[in-house]
Amino acid sequence: MRHLVGVILAVALAATILFAGAWGVGRILVLRGAVTATGTSQALTTQRGLFAVGAVLATGLVIGIFLAVPGISPLATGLPGIVLVAWSTLVVLHNQYATRYLPLPKTHFGTGFTFLLFSGILGMIGAAMVIPLAIPSRWRRPVYEDDELDPEDIDVQAELGLIP
Image (cartoon, rainbow, N blue to C red):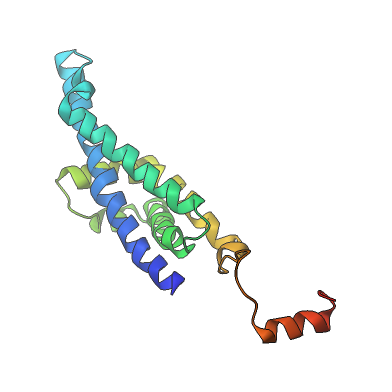
């Protein structure tokens, strides 16, 4: 059941990366262009700039929580991480295929996602998100002190000499 919830969280995390993270980066890029055109450095401190920075920070916070909490299935970060690494690899191998399948082109989502993809940031984030897949303890259910042992488990432990 925990891994089924992990798959659902993986879909939610992928949507968060696209709709919050990529949107925030796209807005920051637009505001950064406004900064260089007008010569002012106050564009990111406006309400739009703070929402964009907040969206990127919230995305990073969600990714960090999913990576750090041991009770969350490794599939929650591993599946979107595999997709991000594969997409970054596709950029290196066949650039035309990678650009053909970009989500929501000509929007702030698409602009931010394209920037993150072609700068290599999505590849690095994806590589970090895949790491919990290789940790065996993340695949098992956490055992708590107050959990009662089944009689069968007690018999097995007694045979192994783990309990007197």
